[in-house]
Amino acid sequence: MTARLLVIGGAERHRPGGEAILRRFVDLAGGPQADIVVIATASGEPATLEAEYATLFTRFGARRARGLRINTRSQANDRGVVHALAPATGVFFTGGDQQRITGVLGGTLVDAALQTLVKGGAVVLGGTSAGAAMMSGTMITGGVAPGVARASVRTGPGLEFLPGVVIDMHFAERGRLNRLLSAVALYPHELGVGIDEDTAILADGDRFEVLGTGAVTVVDAGAATDIVVPAEGPIALAGARIHVLPAGSRFELTGRRPAILQKETAA
Amino acid sequence: MTARLLVIGGAERHRPGGEAILRRFVDLAGGPQADIVVIATASGEPATLEAEYATLFTRFGARRARGLRINTRSQANDRGVVHALAPATGVFFTGGDQQRITGVLGGTLVDAALQTLVKGGAVVLGGTSAGAAMMSGTMITGGVAPGVARASVRTGPGLEFLPGVVIDMHFAERGRLNRLLSAVALYPHELGVGIDEDTAILADGDRFEVLGTGAVTVVDAGAATDIVVPAEGPIALAGARIHVLPAGSRFELTGRRPAILQKETAA
Image (tube, rainbow over all chains, first blue to last red; front, top):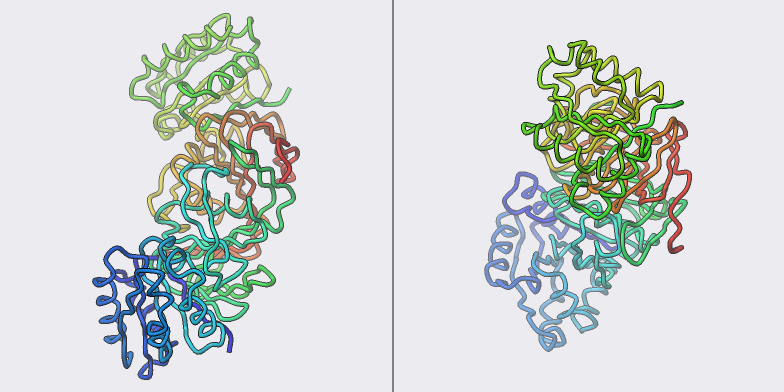
């Protein structure tokens, strides 16, 4: 088995594509056999989000869905908490602040257990918004400037469930393409993947597929002929590639190329 | 002589790079010999903008700078107004609503005179914001959706001083990359040129150079391997190219390639 990751761009709970995405998560986790753990470490209101997602996953056919409260590093290093994860077939991370996830879980027993369960294929890992961002190798933590510049993005290491990729979310809705371009200009080894709200990628090994109502924007600075990053002011970036991929599209991560595009209307 | 166009992304009057851009316009128009006409047709307050730019151009060394009021198509077809343009070495279009410019000037005697004066090299043409957008072959007039979609951009013909190009302005500041990607996905023959505020391109024949404090983002769907434009919902666009070009960069329009990049720090 390869790692299966469902990476959602946020705002899927109350939107038309969201139900289909969350139903897909339940199916991937085993449908009527699914045992899903909801982790709301990113959120300041974990009880609300745990209950809301557990209700949705049960309604969508899971055998069991429950919150697992991890608010501190000592909880994340507690063998009882690790034990509670063992029967899970799906683990879902809610939105909030992605640095809470990496700060509370990073390097703990729960982190190690999740890596093993996910990479071995025993667990499908889902996450939305902050819960999506933390899956990156390089995680975007902020950034303020409007253009493509060093100041436009701050990054730190994510939990690396999807290495070689930098994920941004709420992508079209918050106009984040310049932030993602800044990230890949700084780190062209990373492939930039911007996921719209109510939209997801389902990564399975070397490929991902796009689900939902929006699109996924891939920015690839690997092909760039020149990248000049001054300490301040705008970055120069020549010859980068960009792909805009709606639902049904597939993408090969190793070759950095779209594999199948949706064919609704040929232009 | 070839047509010389100074195309400004807006908000240059009160910003650090703006003085240098407007001084460059005066120099291009002949410096101490410059005779500059300011046309504020796009604006609902033409008198204010005419006076403001005329004062700036005179302060920056022009021999003469004056407003030329063209609010109606009958004024734009008036031989007296055309006559007033004849001695000009520079013509500058202010911001406002670009559809006012194309609606009032399109196909008139003033339009014809400007085409002749600019293409013959007798006049350098400057414009900011709406006055920049109208120089496009295909002019962006609006668009509301956040993603890359048919609904994200509305276009109409510009005055075609720079054919084969679709210009967007206030580019980074208003997060307009998805709008410009939508335009070039719909019309891949057009090269998308997004100009930040306080930033300009100086086009001279087949090349342009970037000036100012921001960057110019070029999106090129010519290399795209697949473009799928559904009636509604997100566009699929695979293999487009993107270039982010700060001040000092040059770009070849015919070959669609950056010619020289700023070399401040090699990454």
